[in-house]
Image (cartoon, rainbow, N blue to C red; front, top):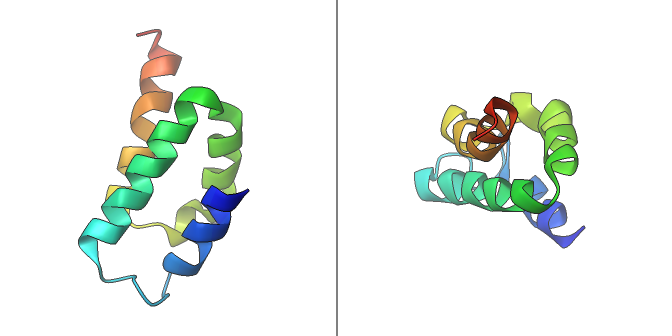
Length: 71
């Protein structure tokens, strides 16, 4: 999928690893995608979560946590 193909080069020790707003935007994009495809985003986070920065993971998990809590 284009979203993940775009994210992957920018995570971990990649070129934009130190760019706060790039990392934050990746989290926003994942959060937005999780509304339509929560299982897909969960699978991405399981596979690549260790390579994502804490702000990225936090943003990506916001909607998933709300959904799980029933909000």
